[in-house]
Length: 388
Ligand code: SAH
Ligand code: SF4
Image (cartoon, rainbow, N blue to C red; front, side, top):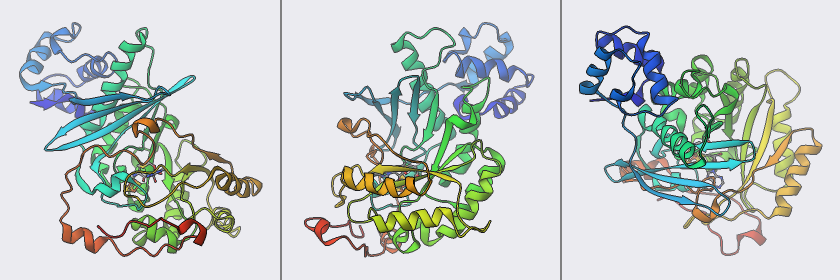
């Protein structure tokens, strides 16, 4: 049985052809699935009977089993979905006045292994399929419409951020059809500006996304120089900041917005000093030449602790001082509000359940000893996690 959630509309057209049906029928079918949340082909009354009959024997619209659901005091909802073989992934809905944002996972675990991230800490199990990525949106949208009593046509989810578990650009083949389904006017109809891919900096895939499906881009920077970024985001050793910024400048030529969002997780005594703020300002401003700097907005994310991280959140005063340096330098800088931390749904706390399938030998090669220098006064009692 083929799960129809895996297809974007073009893919569904191919599938209809394989069944001996006209391609254009895919549009009707796509609308039933993604605009009305219908799972039963027999209920799709305006579809040709021949297609309904064929679908009944060859296809399913298979959602993900919900392992648990938690609602935070601030209304944030976190779903844990069972994706089989001991893996579970998390999806978070963040309600705000006038909009609803869904934070979607792209992998069970993550291989990038950033020092400050609960998902990275768990290791990597596998890529999610396009169907599993879309199923998170499908479930959330239609579950919320029922709960909120929305009228037909009213949308619960207005924004999607690929900021859940995993590195979306290390699961590129599955990501792109899922993004197309989100953007499709016959699907979820989200504008490119309201769908954000967040990446730790997979340079070749930033270049491909620019050509295949340019949505809003957020880049997880976290450090103003390569020495520190190498430690915090190990992928930087492969794609250092100069290459990353060059790819971002290229991306901007086709991006739906005229800036890249840079995410910067504020770690007490690690990357949050006023000197580091000045270095970051100089980095994004560049030296005035076309080949440096980056048109960006900076989003500071106070570190969300998780067990065994050994790291600490910067104090509000330190975050404010850091932001002030950037703002005075003319860079739009915001501090991300922490949402849903009472149910461990905040950035970097998503851990689901992941069977680490990377061999221990491989992981210890990948992880180098950490040499982060902390301010002496912040160092007491804190230890950066060493190689697993
Ligand atoms: N893999 C992608 C997207 C998922 S993480 C990426 O790294 O961009 C989404 C954001 O949360 C990233 O900016 C990530 O660096 C940040 N993050 C990870 N762990 C965090 C933590 N413990 N506290 C705050 N932000 C964190
Ligand atoms: Fe992976 Fe992103 Fe976490 Fe880094 S921050 S380990 S890239 S999910």
